[in-house]
Image 1: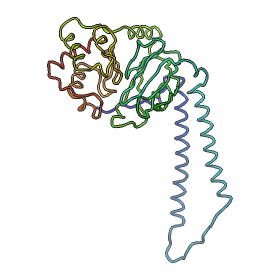
Image 2: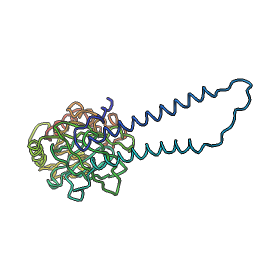
Image 3: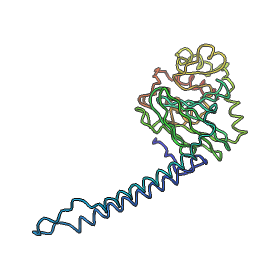
Length: 320
């Protein structure tokens, strides 16, 4: 499965709209400069080609007028691009309101993204699938847990590096509901290409319902394979890396933050940073041998047998 392409030139937000024209202008100017330089090079190569025994051609050691013209043209192009970029930056990253409390805190780590919603306290923490309401912009605080990452959702916002020990801020927003693709745009290790995520833009009513559902804790299964899977989850030490908020498993210590929060894991659309769609079949494949699915991942292989895989999948599928 190859990574899906990012629709860079299809903005779905006023914050991303200025980027497209700037890209086209830059490409157009670059194309003109390339055509002129390549054309003149070919012309002079033919015009002053070697023609037998006519001797050494006259040597020119400088031409002040031509040098000023070429320097002035290059400077004009740079000034034009700088001005257009400055104007676009003011539209994609407004400064007003950036000092307030963030609406989302997004953290990049090898190789997945987590996001928390401060307005909901510590109750809402998601991985690789962010949700936002349409019709307004949200302030994102960006962090890194290990190396430099780069948060990029080209249809909704500009890109910004996530630097260890620092915080960055950017605005994100969507004008219409939909699911938008994002990626890490800074090489960050072996699975950089599979540090994908999605941003789901919802109407304000649907977003409020989603946030309320995410704030609810997970219920402990009462019987069957799911209950056996919950016990296996605790017995295998999964709680050292993953959080499941709720009774029973949470009380047994499911409060790790090395890996993604799993409280509502089954409600997400992608698995392992976008490598696979989140289905029971793919989840079983992932748990059987994580390294075969995503080489280099920090997820250990517990060498589970068929029955254990079925029980663990049954439990994780209850986390909606």
